[in-house]
Length: 168
Image (cartoon, rainbow, N blue to C red; front, side, top):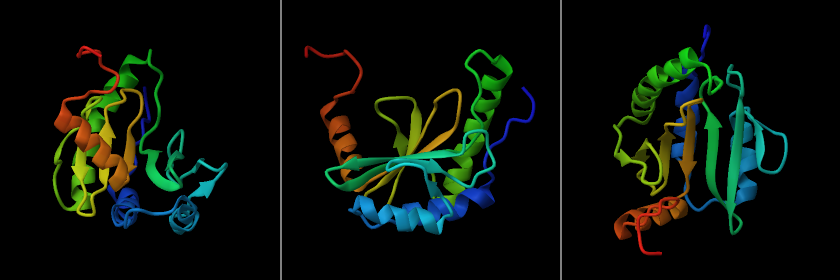
């Protein structure tokens, strides 16, 4: 694997600054304006392209009852799951990305993802930024306050979606 790319801190900082500053809730329709300010282009109602110089510069959105619930976007090249050198490069870049997100936000990781491997930053406005360890690509996830609250409730109740570790 040669030439594996990850978004630079200089590219990521304005994006995270804008997205971390969202006042929740935000109507789904307002995202067109907000993402347009970042230079991102919609290619459908829920998907589009970022301006990052990576192999798959995509983003996707989540809609929860007319409100924006999540924004997910790649911050690195994607590698094949049978490319051992590429998978190793993603793991090395994961540690770098975690430090980069902390630097951009001005504070460190506040916890670990509950339903999958990864780390989180709980934002002052109640939202959350997740950096899951997806193994083949680095992806940042910005969750609304509502979605983050649901996740925090699951954690408090000990419910792990996708895991069969209870009597249900």
